[in-house]
Image 1: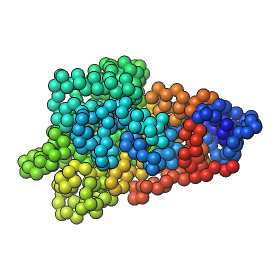
Image 2 (image 1 turned 120 degrees about the horizontal axis):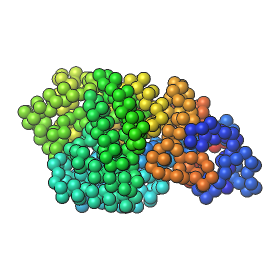
Image 3 (image 1 turned 120 degrees about the vertical axis):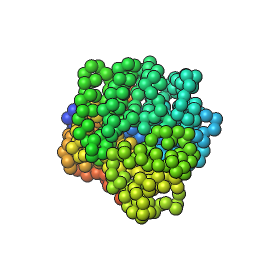
Length: 504
């Protein structure tokens, strides 16, 4: 038996902490008590420290990195389980030749080489061989389903829609946690209500989660929210709106209206919640600002259009008229080639000045030279809007972290310590109990997991031991690959897997 004694224990449900010890055996919690540990127990004195359930990252893009024992960025934050397969991107299913899936999802997943699994079952067999093992859950990406059936073509036939539905059904039967859509990313962006509704009904039949990267977080935010709420009303699915926000200064006043619509739907009985990371800046691929038609057929087709004078002009005109951020708001963080590594860390405005051209022209030149593979960080939302989201009772806090060939967003290494340190201790936007609830029991409930996210007898012994006064993110936009401070120990299944120290 392992006994963590003399701690301040947060059970994950949002109530006040208690002074107690946590006893664990055979990977499970056996007691939360002030009793003296039994003879023979391995005792760790946690005086001055807090214990919380292991954090559950409900929105992650570490689909390939969770398979790698050397990737400890999430563990060092206290994350003991994560949900991958978000925003329409999953590492399965793929056709016999996985080339198109790698082209589609490579900008989010980063890893090169031969990856891609024909089914959810095959992916889970591989993930369960990794040290993260039982802490890996995955949605099935609608974009990946589309690519498996139609490639990067945006048009779709009824027969192809049926094939996609069958693939989703098989994935759910094999353990997928649900469906994700990425309605700003081609080819999934071409899907309308009639294509998505049958898939959401299938998700509802299996009592799984539907998570959506909506069609717009900018000027079309309200319509995008209403589309997803109407899908949930029509199908009865459990809806998770991914990284809700109003992006771009001109759109900040739309957030309150979006939340009003979500709250009204919840009062009607729609099972809807949302999530957000604890930062004002987001991170994505630069192609997100392009019109859908420019991406039809994949990156080869995009590059051909960028080389065509007329098509290039049309793309540039559309981007200029729809982009919510300024060129100063968008910073290059990752490129495919060595030749353009100099651009990493530069705002789009600075890149344009270096190349002596307009910002949108510089953006399209960079996309052409990088064959579409450019990552960025973008300044999206106001501090007051972020506070409104994080404090909302329907909000779960996530990392939305992904790896790039350059400078990742600091959320990859720091989202959860930033929440508990920066948001709770420094800004005092939430109580510590509330914040812990938003990264433990709340996301576990969204996934229907009854033995995670809580500290109680019978639950998995996934635990984080931390110093309330010291926990903090050290990752910054300039130096994002820095480990947090203040986390003494992280246990998965009662086994120590990360942490600064344990005082014996």
